[in-house]
Length: 264
Image 1 (spheres, rainbow, N blue to C red):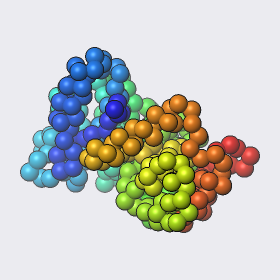
Image 2: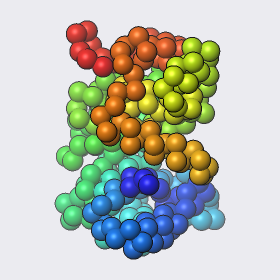
Image 3: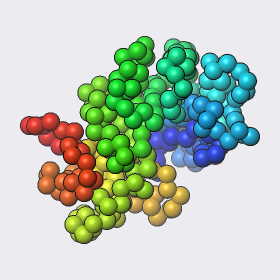
Image 4: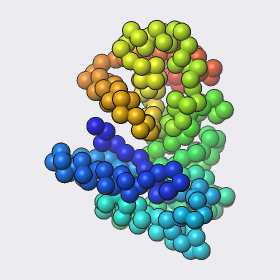
């Protein structure tokens, strides 16, 4: 099964406590240690929450909300540290952004968090500024992967150049034309994959970590089988022409972000 899980203390969309119950039960059954798993969660600002279900005191200072949010996440996830803690979205000003970020950095210093990241930043200028001004640099950028943002070509290039993991969400929902056209369907068949599995393989081949939120057991099995094939050393796409069957259908120029002369 998957050992890389990215919930959030955000009851409107996530069940963080369920992840805590799930990983501890699985660890017991499979004789795993906490270090065998990688857990990522988020700090979400007020605007992202159901006003009737917020994991911190809404009247507290911004810095205190961040502290309370992490405390709640550690309780929900039944752990004493978080592998990756992501800022769910921009604040209403750079001043408030860095109030949140400096507080998050403090928990890296204390050992309660291993790395930090940002999410929902769609201007490369903002990603660069957040990176340059941070004492502890973001190691993750997590964004919606869709045509409205030009599939984050410039942001992904910046991530590649600065050893930042680019995580995508809305990956399948936003891009059906890229993996459901006739040539993609035929390629998926020859690879022994579903069209969706082929698109996940495409994303990973160009340096993207797609976030997988399926609740369908069969889809989970297919996704794990794909990961096992990749981890075994198999190259799903044998050359750039096969990648282009999917990439060109995105409708975004320079989708691969790979420079001339580099290998895919």
